[in-house]
Structures are given as C-alpha cells and as structure tokens.
Length: 307
Image (tube, rainbow, N blue to C red; front, side, top):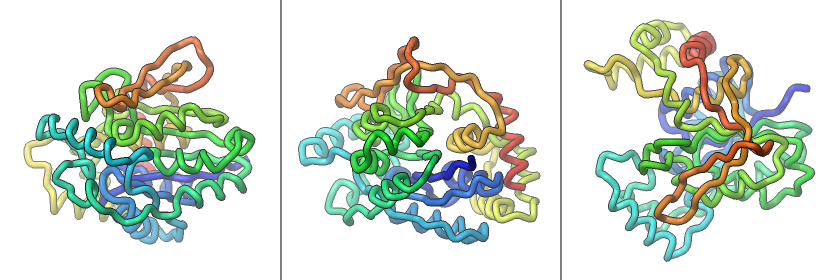
C-alpha cells in the first residue's frame, strides 16, 4: 500500500524545513497536504514559503495555515515563558519566540484551519505518514478531533527533542521547547507508531563545500535556489552549511537510509524549569527513537534527490 504523506512545517526561505520539502518531492514522496505552524516564523509566512516552493517544483499541493501560538497560551503562561526566555543567552536561536518579536507576544492573527484540515485528511486516509518538522501544535489539535481507531492507521514522525543536550536550553531542543504540551499530547496518542528523530542525530549530517558546489550547479529548482543562497549569503571561512536537521527525518521516513532505532517510552517535561526536555525509558514498545544514523549516506541520498 502506498502511504499518504502530510508535512507539518515552520518553513522559511531555504531553511532545513525547505530542504526537506525539496528532498521529499525529489525523492517521489510528494505530500498530499502541507500544514504550517509558528516556530521559525509565523504560520502564514511558512504557508507562503511552502506554496512558492511546491509551485516551483511543479506541484499544486494544498497548504493550510495553522497555529500561531502554543497549545496552552493564557496570560500567566505567556508572561512566565517571556520571563524565562529573557534569561537565556542572547545568541540562542529563538525565532518567533524571541522576546523582541512583539507580534508573537501581543495581539496576533487568528489561527488558520490546519488542524481541522489535517483531522479530515487523516479520517479519510487509509494509511498516512505525518511528518512534523516544527512545533506539533496543529497535530495535537487534530488528535483531539479524532478517535483512536483513526489514529491507529497512521504513523507520526517528529523531528525534534534532545536526548542529551538541547539547542535552546541545556536540555531542550527548539521544536519541543516551543510547545511541550502539544508534544505530550502527541506522544500519548494512539498512533500506529511514533518515531522521534532527535537533535542528537539530526545535527550530524552536514553539506560540505564539495556537495554544495555540485548541487548549486545542478539544473534543478533546488540547485538554482541553493546557488542564489550561496551568492546572497556566502559561507566565508566556514567549511559547510548549517546542519540539515529536518532532512534527516525526511530521508529516514522515505526509507532510503537505515538507522539505529531504540524502542521505549518518551516523556516530555512541560514545567518551566525543564520545558521541552525529554526522557527516554527503554523496555517499552511505545515509541521508536533514532539513536544513530549514517551521516554520509544521508547527505549522499539528499544530493541524489535534489540534483
């Protein structure tokens, strides 16, 4: 059976989410639906990026705007989180959660219909992979609209979380930190499988100079986009581009490269002091957690698909 694919993303212009979308289309796993969420930018900006990217690739894929704020967002939650973020080092990547981003912390546009559209799609689909590349707010809201019999047909893939060292705090990765309450809902729901691809492994594959130079000369939409990026934002003395985090999850979902996977139970912390940190207990057949990948094979497969 050919499985459907939904991608939930906080894509911005040619970030790792966008790289993953280019990869999936190039590899023949064209999403049936794309939903967008706050994170790297607003859900509305991410929707524009996703539409432009998929149109450039010759596909007209439905794109639904989703959540602009976390699942739990009352005055107390907002002020506590703002205070906690203010205490973080200035060089931490916080994207839309940055305290200087007044629209996020103040009045905001209403959320879009992504959660309802995702729920309707999963209701109709016989089998679907749901790939979460950003905070999982939309997915948690969709889960609340579905019964367990529907969810039990589908596989959730989450690119995020950190088993050891985070990239926002010492213990929390950005996607998990942005909405741990939503991640807790998703981890506790009745999916057929849940596979988590944590920061510990997504940080390993990197595009080196040789790969970048080959890809940017390729006569493909991604080759042109990467060439434009290299021209506008040269690496200087850096030997590679930033890690291709979300591409790792996309390649593993595609099944082109194998990985070492541990089975157990993941839990996520929602209290402020350890917000977004995850714990992995072995001995349970609940969640699949990727613990090691062949970084070179990931990069090679990505280059093949987008060149």
